[in-house]
Image (tube, rainbow, N blue to C red; front, side):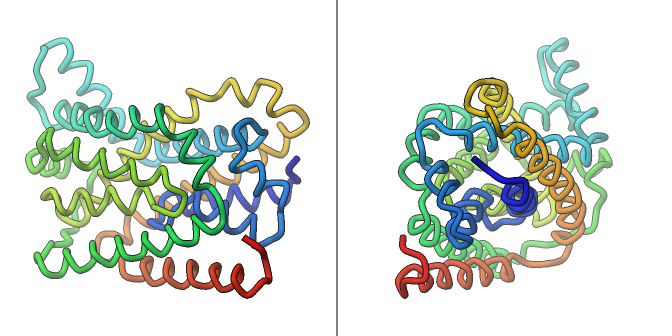
Length: 299
């Protein structure tokens, strides 16, 4: 099974790396392998295991943290959704933003339901995760290069104000939202960051730097929450027998760390770049490959 220490450390990794553009799944695979937690490494790529129930609760905790932090914006978006349904058209910025988020959620949602299980069992392994972490670094470098060469501005606005929501809604189209949502599919590979590819997708499709980051965090909420709630019965079923207290401890740590992470990143992306995260991904991926190939841990 899983100990309290393992659960809480992996929960901390989940809460931080889910929102930093460095891949939460890749980190959980690599660090469990590095620490020699063979029981967890085997379960991560297993067809049926307690680790599925564990991931469910980590996702629910992370999404809850995002909902709490962006609660004012989500209240406006939800109100906008219902008002647009009653009017049968989206007129205000928050009404349009609600439908943009729905459209952006659909591609990864459909693909995830179909292929997530297969991709996890095939690629949630240390060697694959190390390689994809390095690939993630190249993706982030491309994003940083694109920002600099296309003179993407980094304005300081309050995204929770309607003026910023209007700016985002005006810049976005449903086609662009679908393209950003499709980028999330890459995050099904352990090592590719969901927030990283969606931020870059937002920038490439026309958003400025800060709005792309915050749209990414808003977009992460429904997809992470849906993934958790859909498989919530796993937590209450036999898969979690003997591990529920440890799982809840890990989920609590994941939720708290996710809240403080998004609080930090919400300000960080106002005027900072993706380059430090790219360098970190290169360093981590290369280090893990060296550890494996030099024989400290066998892949």
